[in-house]
Every structure is written in structure tokens, then in C-alpha cells.
Image 1 (cartoon, rainbow, N blue to C red):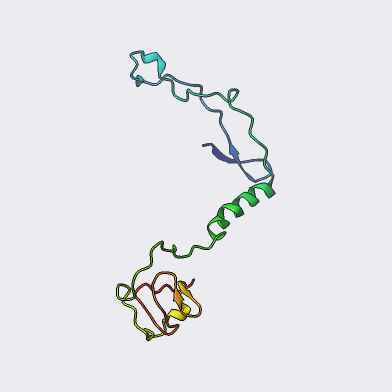
Image 2 (cartoon, one colour; image 1 turned 60 degrees about the horizontal axis):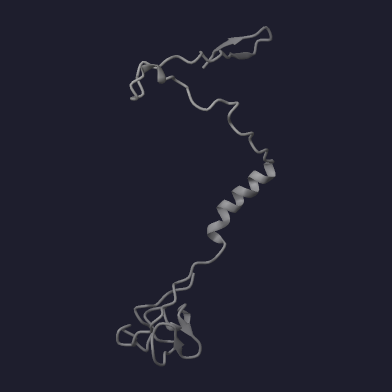
Length: 133
């Protein structure tokens, strides 16, 4: 970096130095020619494409879109393709504490379920219970 000094007006100023010119690297690049390894070698500024000017509004809009992307579509439990029996789901006709089929995401009013076969009571419960978000 540079060294600091005080100017005539008493404020601290930063003395910026120019970069040193490219120096040959003492390490060869592995192709047999020790002259091919230059520190800082690569694409020059003249070879780079011109940067696309972006307004502050465009940058903020892109950032908000990036942050809001996960919140765009709510994620729900995947709907199964095959229903299982009440015995396999360990269905019981009474609720388990405050959890009951009536508030489950799989419950279809009045007495059906998306994952369990047969008549389902809104006051019932099974091991596949899924509380809505």
C-alpha cells in the first residue's frame, strides 16, 4: 500500500505508489522454458470486454430478486402417487394431542385423505400427519 503523510492543510493523505513492472518469476511453468513464467502475466486490460454499466436501481432489483427467489413458491409436502391402508398409516379415529386430520395438509373434506385409503374422521390421526406451514 502507500505511506501516510500530512499535507499543508493538516489532513492525512495517502501516498499511492505505482505498481512495479512485470518481473520474470523464478519458478518455471513446467513447459521447459523458464522465460515463460511471468508474474502478473495474463489478459491485459485492453483485451477485456467493456463492462456493462449498471444503475444502482438495477443492482438493487437483482439483489431483491435473488433474495426473494426461495420465497416465491411455497413448498408443500409432495403428494404421493399411491395411497396406503389405514393399518399401514397407524390411523386412529381420535386425535393425538392437538394434532388431528382436520388440520392436516393431506385431509380432503369431509372424510377423505390424499395418502390414506378409506373413510377418515376429521378428529382422527395417523403417523403421516403433516401440519401446514
